[in-house]
Image 1 (cartoon, one colour):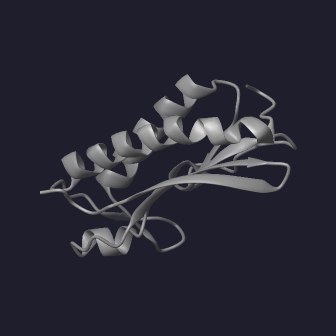
Image 2 (cartoon, rainbow, N blue to C red):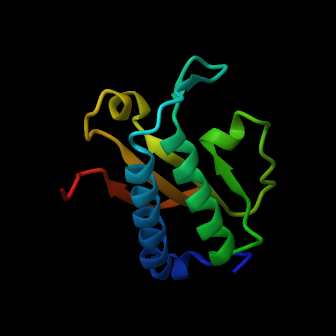
Length: 129
């Protein structure tokens, strides 16, 4: 799968959706943890951001261990190198400020970027309880 064919991207949606649902469960588990910190750009990051990113990275590595992952939280630790080929683009908890405020106005975003085209899977945060 190292050179993703745009014709097969639609088959990835189920797998990417499963990964986002696992990340949503990690967010719910980490929801009560404190420890909000501020990144260099001034934006907040929570244990839920980091838990979701870890779940997503593991899931994507299982899906395709060769494709690079560019993630918002990992980018803070260094500039990712993706070259000219396809890669995964991840925001594990888009809407961290809303999450911190206790609102359900956030999403989990995973995109496959290939040849300048994105195919995204996302999961709304709506609580089922």
